[in-house]
Each structure stands twice: as structure tokens, then as C-alpha cells.
Length: 587
Ligand code: PEP
Ligand code: MG
Image (cartoon, rainbow, N blue to C red):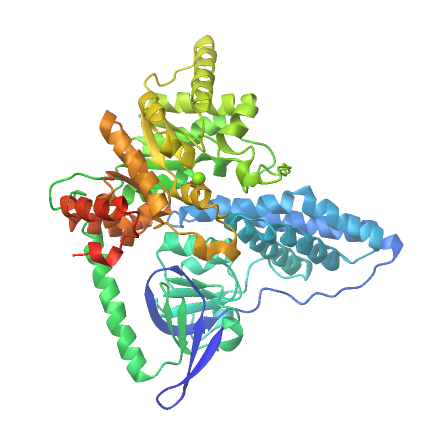
């Protein structure tokens, strides 16, 4: 989207993308050359099929090797995510779905290697784009990036982008006032750019969970992604303002606009500094209520960020991410290492590990769901109980990890007490197996359930009595309460966290925990939204779990809140099933 705005002496260009990492950057553009190479499409002679396939396989292997070398030589200060992302790219290259299918196109249709590769890439990319889950949809971008890398190798150049000096010789080596503008930035390119201390990243492609966004977040560099055609509209050396919160990009702004954004930038920097000082401050309200702040993680490495943000523990480790994007599920030892590393990093703080939440939009590679309505089908605990070998392996790994510190096992999508009993039995079987092997394991592991199906929030008592803790998954609770598919954009405006029915279910669950003295957390997106903190405190919530980056914003709200006053306001609105006015809870 673009709009020309007349301002000052020249014309200021205003572009809108998606804000991916908060922060305001003001600086000169460094435009990276297009990574989509123009490739020749021609048919080869039948006699040349073998040689063309060899050329393709050699290029794939060389590119994969180049990526693996980069992983092996990662600098100590490189963001942790980069190693994992580069490995994913090299695995995509080694995947036969890419190489063998492309070679099929060479041998059957006599396409040249480049044509076969881009065709197969398009097929895979389309399969990813059709996926419901936003994270998986974004993975189509990874396919495109690795293919561009192989095309560079096939064309005789390096798999890497040209050095920065070749992009903008006069700007190379300058400081963090440079703003990188690109069609897309792959993890490998991010690694190369890392040394340049850039002020922001702007890309045509990508979404909030694209790799550019993930790595920029870990580098703490503002980013705007999915800006459409920013690379075509911006020239090297243009003065840019990028607002990573709103996704706004201003090209060659007027002096007045520049002054205004300098003021906002200074305010943002001051606010971050103030927030950083809260890291070790207690999360206690004005009336002395202590609140637990936990972190949500998807990969073991993220525990470091949780600790750095001052988290009291891990409130949700989405273990299914260890299983996705690979050919075979991880075995017991590999899972044990992953869980134990988080437990060790958290050094005595509780670590809540959710058992596999597969099914619906998160499937094992090559395992397509056949359910008519996958969100209501065999997902999460239903899937695990139907696959006892897979579940048993995970439970043994979890029990072994619990030997290193406090582990809480969290069961996703529970709707019936029979699932809780069956999980306890499976845990008992896993325990006996470890015992028989003489393996060390943790003895006082806690068992809890996600409250994300309305049925259990309504009939909560047996669950809260039988389990050690509960965690409310508001993302799914909203979806199932309001009958709104959380990944369907067409009904996105009806996905309403503030719906009185949703809030009553949350209140009912918190009150039930309070009655029997068992902890209840919220680990859905609501917990990390600082605008909702006061409302959740008003509902009586004492444990929040969120992305580590959101933790200090929420802590700031907690330290300014008075829970007693909030309880009164929230309860009176809920009793009348009225919408709660968030503005009315402020101050
Ligand atoms: C939820 O449903 O709120 C939740 C935390 O789980 P997920 O987003 O992984 O479904
Ligand atoms: Mg959920």
C-alpha cells in the first residue's frame, strides 16, 4: 500500500507494512539487490538428462554444505535462532521432495535444472501457503529463499548475497543509522548483515512470524515486514523513518515529520530503559498482591531469553515445535536433552512442558489430517492417547528431565476427565518402564491441564480437584466458545477476547482454583497484552505466561494496579454480562 503525501520542499512517500519488531529507526536506506534471480527456462536434449540432474544435485549439495559450514562457524555473539534457522534451510535442501521431484521434471519433461527447481519450489510454496497455521504458511518463504540460494550456485556465483560494500559502497561500514531494505532476508543473509549494526530491517515479503521478524526480534532491531513493494520504491541513500510498532515507513520525510519522529524515538528509548530497570523488580501490585510472570517458549534455546527477561519460570513450552519440520519425530534421548536443557537453564524455577499439541493445523511431516473439521478432530491429548508409543516416548523423556529440576506436565485440549485418568495411567506406565531400566527420573512431577475447551471451564470442579494446576489457553478458548476459527481471516473481526462469555469462563476457572488453593495461569496471547493486564488482575489472575519480550510491559502495568478496585469493577460488569470498558480500568 502507498500514499504520496506532499510535505516541505519534496514529496514524502508513506508506505504501510506490518510492524514486526517495535522501535523507531531513522536513517539512510541500503537497498539489497533482488534475491529472486531471473533464470533461463529451456528444454534439454534427452541425452543430457543425467548430466543436468547431476548439475542440480551438485548445486543442492554445495548449497546445503555452505549452510552447514555457516552453522559450524557461527560467531559467539550471533543470535541463537540463526543456527536453528540455517539448519532448517539445509534440511529443506536435503529433503527428497525437493531434489527428487525436481529431477523427475528434468527426466520426464526435459526442463533445465533451474526451471525444474523453480517449478518444484512453486509447488511446495503453494502447499505451504494453503496451510491454515500462520507459522507454517510463512515457511513457504523458506522454500523460496533456499531455492534462490541454489539458483545463485547454479549461475556460478556464491550462495551468499554480495558483500555489503557491493550493495552500497559508500555506506558500508557505517553505523546503526543504516536501514536495510530488501525483498526478503534469509537467515543466512541476516548472519552476514549482523556485523553491520543496522537500525532497522524493511522487507517486501514476510509476516510477523517470518524469519526476518524472528531474527530481528532476537537482535532487538526494529522491523517492518510485508511492506509490498518497498524495495522497488526506495533508493539507496533515501532518508527513511521506520516505525516497527505501526508498520509505517516514511521515505524522505519533511523536517517537521522528522522532528516529530525524533521526539517519539527518544521517548521510546527512554521507555525501554525504564522497562529494563524493572527486570529485577518484583511483580507486586499497589495493594501487595504478588503475581507470577512466566514465559512461553517454542524451542529450548528460548529459555535464555526468558531468564534474561526475569521470568519466574516457563509457563508454556510448546513441545510440538520439536516435532515439526523434520522427517522423523525426535526419540526419547533427543527429547530428554531438549527438556533437560530448559530445566537446567531455569535453575530451579518451574518449567511447564505441554505434551504434544499436534493435529488440527500442526501436523507431523507427511501426515495429513483426514478429519472433516480438524480443529474438532483428533488433536492434542486425543492424538496422543490414540498414539501410545509416541506419547510414552515423550512422557519418559519428561520424567527423566524432571530429575534435573521442577517440571510441570501440561495436557492440551482436555475436554473429559477420562483423558486426565488415561494420561495418569500413561505416566505410570512410563515410570515403570524407566524403573525397570534403572533410569533416573523426577519423582514429584506435577500434572495440569490446559483450559481451552469451554466444557471444562463450565464443569471445572473435578478437574481442579484432581489436577495440580490449570492453565487457560485463551487462544483456543475464544475459538471454541465463539465458534470462530482462529486462523480464518474472514471471521477475524468476530474473534473477540473481551466477549463476556469468554471472560465468565476465565473467571469461573480462576475462582475454582482459588477455592481449592491450586494455581491457575493464563498462557494464551491475552496474558502478554499489556492492555488486558488490569482486566485479568480484576478477574483474580495471579499467574501470567507470555512471550519473554512482553514480560516487562506487563510487569509495569501490574506494579501500577490496585487489584481490589479492579475486582469490584470487573465483577460488576461480568455479573450483568456486559462488555468491560478497558479504558475505565486505567488509572
Ligand atoms: C492457547 O490456545 O491459548 C494456547 C496457549 O495454545 P496454542 O496457541 O499453542 O494453541
Ligand atoms: Mg491451544
